[in-house]
View 1: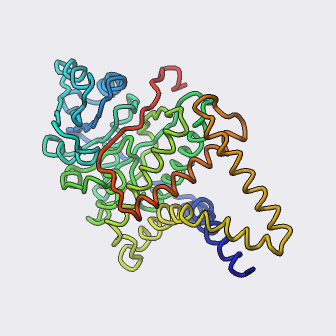
View 2: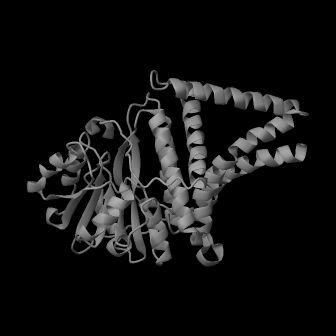
Length: 394
């Protein structure tokens, strides 16, 4: 029983320890002192097409377009295409109001999901560089040029921006800001090592030839973009100067559903591109892909086994009994915070516990959906808060 219990506890502990601590530390040690040369401006700024899929975004779409139209990029070299995924609210009407400023609308008559909508939009994107973003995201004025500069390197196929989570620091999803910052740090280390393994779905650019082939509608195009780039011999890089502001949803339950959807689609995407996990062919990229993505997700799959292992160890060990009691109490406290978060945002440590419970539950749901082949091609965007970005940027 002792050996089995230790093994069950070790499975999730080692998976999380390597994915969240060991792997970033190894990357830091490997890339220490490496500073990639700053890319220069191109002689002439190339044409850029911005693809913005939207489904029932009447509250957000105008703000997104206003920020895109204000970017520091030659207007005559910037195409902005909104892809309305059969929206049934005023989204299309609002977008048409921007037609005199060059904004184009592609209306889909049937729901296709985000990736499906992007597939259908691809032939309408004219430029050699495609920038992908979302309706609830706010792109800062100087953020497109850094993506274009990164793609001036012939070895780079995908350039991913830097997400900055913004919102009320006291809301229920306040822990998301720290996690996003950590994720951006890991991507900067991966970029210094050679290539990131997934782009930011909020804001990234890719070469037209890599963007044009359709991706199965149930997959995540942002994650798949870096995988497809590697298959074609390109690197994908993190661009810290390409900043986009990502409003938090403010609801832990909404955030939990978003995480479950993202992880489930990520698992499907990784399975579809599983050949890239072969270290004999893809070497360092395969190790990064395993460590950053699969190892994290395996930790969620193995997490319930850790509780079983602690229960087995508690039969003979006082320390294990205390650890099990603490774990159960923390879980119950987090659940209580999650269940009451819609009425009253948890504070202090309970907010972190609730955020952790929401994250773990989302990870478990994602695995259940993946095993059940419960594919989510249809798209219900996360409804994020509308915020005053002028005050948030500071």
